[in-house]
Image (cartoon, rainbow, N blue to C red; front, side, top):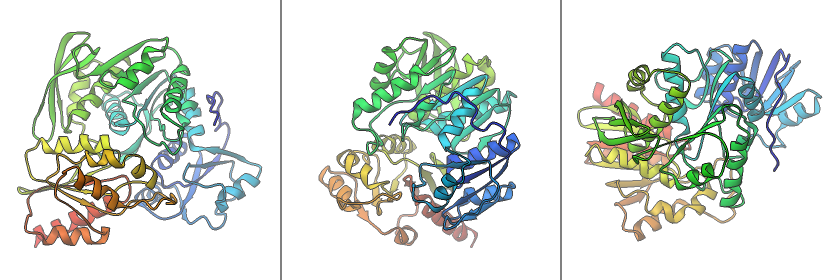
Length: 468
């Protein structure tokens, strides 16, 4: 697959846009931006969800179903990676003679035209890092336009609508479309093997990121994790300015003596080897410490004062489904988290275990291909859990020719001497949790599929019980 930087205005003088698959996180954010730009925006999705309902209340009509054309007199059609070539609406759009573009092409076109642009990419931490940057820029009056891969809890939306001169976007690497972007500043949070159903091998993934970094525009500054060997190697091989962040003192932006402070963190910030200030976060985990370092580094480069950065950063509450606290009582805390890669699972559970309470984990694996690729890695990912509940794999539309199933993860966890584990159907989880003798500690729902719905269901059950 050959990707080339989008160097022209693909929206142009379009007056209307129709988004096929508008209910996705990235598509819903783009819909809001196009409406803000003055276009008449409509769209469709296979089924209703929170995003489609929110868009409808914001004046963006959504049709449920793709069985027939729900558009007329549309200038621009946009589709997501979730839309297959045989989708009825996609085929009709392609045959219409009008402009048809992938979501990433439109987003890259908008970002690449901005006077100042920040792209946040990497395997883990993109959403939280871009959320931090977006929140702080907004809170300090910079009026950015921001597209994030999840709702910023402080805002209740995944989009900040501001000036087109200052652009912040989470950039997805899963399908190689990050190669379409040419930002002024790029953050690479880390780089691990993932989405290997798309990439041929590790070298293909590495080369793709080298291409992305080669696209960058003046000043072409890359901000990268010095804790991550793969990212460090890629950055070392390029020409152009860079800044490293991490937990080691050698980093340009370093977090020294990080400590747990309630459901948050605190650390000493060192810039270029010199102490700069005390950082307090209202989100937990060492992974959020490093996310905050990346945010601080780019914000300073954008001209913000450190004091205003740190004051706003302490008020940042996180992103939806990123260690999101759904319910908290004296005895029980319910947490919902997007972690679906073994590294993300370990990081989230390490953060929760730092609170020193009994930890029950409900994990929904995501995709048959990822389960197969990381089967043995998952066996080592749950070491911080006191109890593990596994449920069926969320397919995300994938075929399953090799008959992958959740029992394979269960067998690996047992073989590795992991926590007490069981397999439950998704519909059985809430009743099991409500009826078991233990009703204290932390109950954490993990996965990138629809396990968040079960977290909401259990939260509602607890609220109803407390009210009674």
